[in-house]
Image 1 (tube, rainbow, N blue to C red):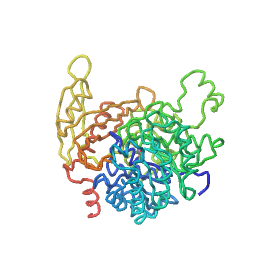
Image 2: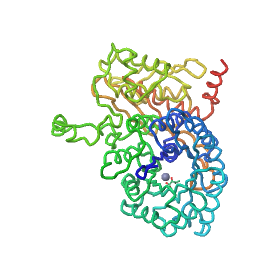
Image 3: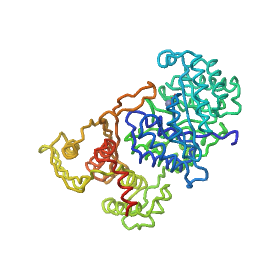
Image 4: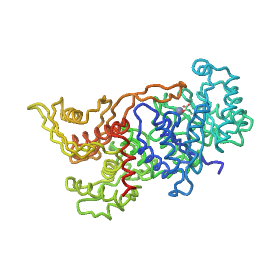
Length: 543
Ligand code: KIV
Ligand code: ZN
């Protein structure tokens, strides 16, 4: 590995998914994992297998499929997180073992506040546990990563001892987390430099950085760590993660890419896949990306002020430090229309980074034709919304078969909804509400009967113009499920939030689709209809 190569360790499926509201189904996790492989991440942390049997199974599926993929020259390392206990380490190993390049990532807190109040362990006990558990992980798996949790607030001298112990016990990647996003970039850079200078054996290991964004400094801290000699960055798509999130993959990668001449560091990321991944993760989690978010926000490449537009027309580089196409955010306007054929659509989708199978192409082409009847010009943004709405959806237990609303100032907003249930039967219900969306959601609730709380509803137009497609993301909270908590070494009841996405030229239809997509995820997770994904796969093979 070259001295200036930075390994990108993506933890969207672990630290990202663990954040409130970012729950994904197993199939969605697999789809994200495939996308991460296409993006070219070096390592993907696929989950925390000890959390629940479902989490273990999801990581195992990723290890089998993505961890052995032939679609890329070298399959990514598949990593599972484990607390420093035998049980967690065994579960992590069971999950990642099928991958061509498995990794166990184990961690134990080293700050006084965590050791005293959370772990109730002395420094000597922490050192002993690290020695034992890293050695145990290493006895199972040839690639072990160790993290001293809350390193940002730990005594550096103690960190050197703990890390040296982890190295002696067999860890080859030492990850330094700023768990609570407390440090300043200069402090974090010094911490990394100090670790590299003072930890015996570190010269044969990879030093990694893992920063949280509580003070909005995650990217700055990560870059400071890399400048000080770290060569792995732990990141998530769109920066999702606990509280204010993790370091955003797109920010670190594009900073290294754009400022290569001053930083001199490279990655193996295929940057043209960034926008697509951002959209995928946003749709699956129901967590909308803020319009002014660096790199992937809707306005990241928009120029509104007249003076900027004038400069841009004269020379792009006046106000643009990256080209939209570098991150797969094409700006082209007139793309396709009513008379465009299947081939033209396919070519355009390929240039946007989608390689769809024949069945998927058929589905998207059908939707494309319907849209082209309503909308004169179809842009890349429309195509992306269409692909997301058509293909990136959870297993469809209930589907929308018809919707009619009456609303305005003259009467009660009323919605009549027709849904098809998992057995193929149609159900119709009409409800009134405070507005058309409320009435629609009430009618859906009456049919589906799955209690939940709507936590977030975001709607926006995909493009300019009155005929634009509307995109809706929702998040709903359902009942609690029992999971192993990462902090407390015990089982806890955690309320689960599900995200949903829908797109349509009719925004009430888009709203209904988004709500149904979240409800379907919740129903699949509840097991009320068995395991429909498994049943569908079995049916396919028994034909
Ligand atoms: O933030 C953190 O400390 C973590 C560790 C488990 C690496 O996510
Ligand atoms: Zn973290």
